[in-house]
Image (tube, rainbow, N blue to C red; front, side, top):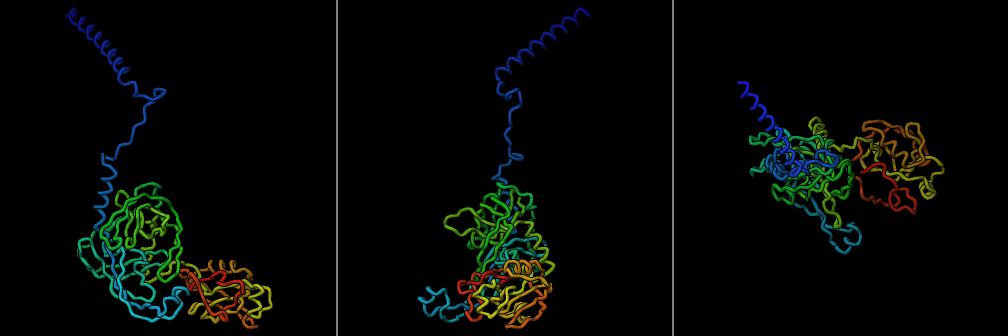
Length: 423
């Protein structure tokens, strides 16, 4: 028995050695590129998650979310001025005579469902009626074709976030989920869904281009709002797309479509309100229904001017300290307190001011509802006035024109120097 086992073991051992040697020769001739310089492992290309391409994930994200994206239509009644002299209208900035006529129109935008109670979020400018107009009918159009009456819950003009609601709609689609916008990466996919130009269920794709952008946007009434902290994206955003969701590749909302740069020289520059901002403002609107300016800064309601020689001569003021009141807006806290154009603010809360900027910043540091005490020179008399501040309106006026005799103004200065607040 021993004589048989020993030869078998020897043969097996020799075979193993020869096999190992042959494998080494094969590896050196066929797998020489399997290691990098210095015998380090080569770089391995990333493979799609679970074998799914980005295109497939985008398609899947759209399919999962588009049923919750809605169109918003409004019937608007108002008045419009028809110029009687088009030549005068063209060359004098729309200040010519005209005939007031009623008009009936329709506005539209996009929105998306955010909870199971029928709450739908959109832009405030979608819900805000145009100047001189009134929204008489608000309808939400769901992707299944249902037209459901809705009502406005609240909107914040400065944040451009609005909330509306449909009641007792049994076929409400599932709410969309918000992503954490602080975790976004530059260059990641961004997918915009909405109703641009009333084209239902339109999808555009781009990337997250940049963060914390500021963009001044003009309103239909000729005013301007300076929005800050916006998300920039290359996903095209067109009229009517406002209020729709900007989603990531997983179908979560990373922002709300807002606007695009209107320039013949700019392409692929769109803006969205980050998801964290939308979520925060919506939570506030749900607790506090109604229309909000959202600026949370004190509002006095005047335009101011430095005390130049021309201004002092015009109002008959011989002092050296203070800031002149150039204009007072009707219904503002300053107007209610009896402040008039031509007055000079000498002190506020015991602090003297000679700079429009310094006084502007001081008032802006106060909160709505705060009370300030003004020491005022008015037509040769001094008086102390306590004023409860309002909230600064979001919209900035493009221009203000008042009769010359109503406002102290340096002859070399054609427009108010620095607005304390807006109308």
